[in-house]
Length: 85
Image 1 (cartoon, rainbow, N blue to C red):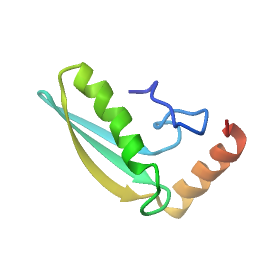
Image 2 (image 1 turned 90 degrees about the vertical axis):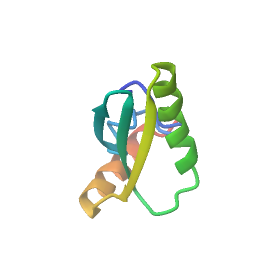
Image 3 (image 1 turned 90 degrees about the horizontal axis):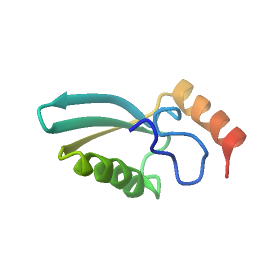
Image 4 (image 1 turned 30 degrees about the horizontal axis):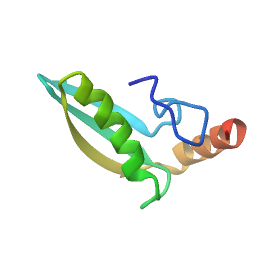
């Protein structure tokens, strides 16, 4: 999962802080997504990229979504500015 990159920013979802926590329970994987802003337009695309990778491993994805803190959002925006494709 560490290799899954943002479609427009040359960083992984983990580097950007979008994927916060991953919990594995047998074949179920709970991923906590921290979005920089509520209702970002590519939310479903980001979730699908993780879901496909997990399905290839035979795991099921459970999604939990939160919004980044101000500090996390600023770090995300700084990385976005430096690494925009």
